[in-house]
Image (cartoon, rainbow over all chains, first blue to last red; front, side, top):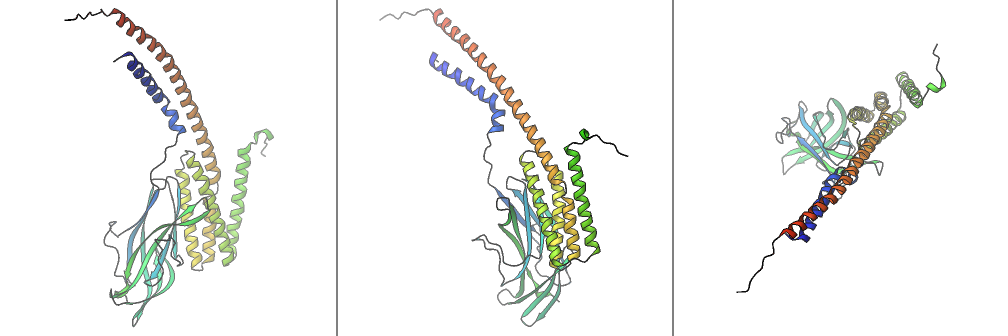
Length: 199
Length: 177
């Protein structure tokens, strides 16, 4: 090693050591960008697995699922979950436009989650006032966690899939502090229910 | 009889008095709701007020969290209030305006004081953060100064040693063959 190389090596070493000494202060000042920001939203079956979801339902049964949210948005989030119920002809949220279903929510859950936090709850639901007339099935009431609400939904016989199909689905909304309003978070989950065996 | 000198009353006392006043107003409101029937408009108004209170509390807690405060206890209260408001909205949907109003007022009760608590936590967290920054900056400054002096001394030492080694070298004479 000649003198010039040694000089360069010495002062670079001093500079590196200086940066190490300065690093705690730099860590306070410099905020590195976080990872991807997103929220997870899921439904699990009664055994807390992604299987065994209620499908064939009737007026006499009480059905169980688990609903969960995980926050990876980097901040404390205020989520709003809307519970909606539809027949096969009514609107679902639009994945392409990111718009929610136009159906009125029947129930709601409000969740506050820190970054990295997980919220999960058991949801029990049942149906009341189920009737059938020819090719039409009707559901008058939906109970969720013991609270009943009038839904009055009619489903026509699905010739292809052989059943009267309804869908219970959940939309995830998030409070946007900039807009001072809840906005659809472009996530929804749901389960199809076949009321064929009802009554 | 309570005797209190004026200089003993500070801002905390005024805040406590304000809080007590707000609690009293809300309690009167609840009692009124229990005594008289509530119509849909009133119920919607109370739910809207509860939502506003909840959002304000959330904003204050989020700001405190951003400042680095531990807001776990406040989040528990927000969750509780959120549950009450969700139930109130559900009851409003089925036309049970009385209970919906009651739950909405309970929601407002639950978040009462959360904004103040969050602001206090935020101020404390900011002060801690500032102290931590100044301490870190001071330690770094001292460390850099020491490093600067030592590196100059070290460089003089190594430079002298290098030249001494060069001067001590015996010249080699290469003869032509």
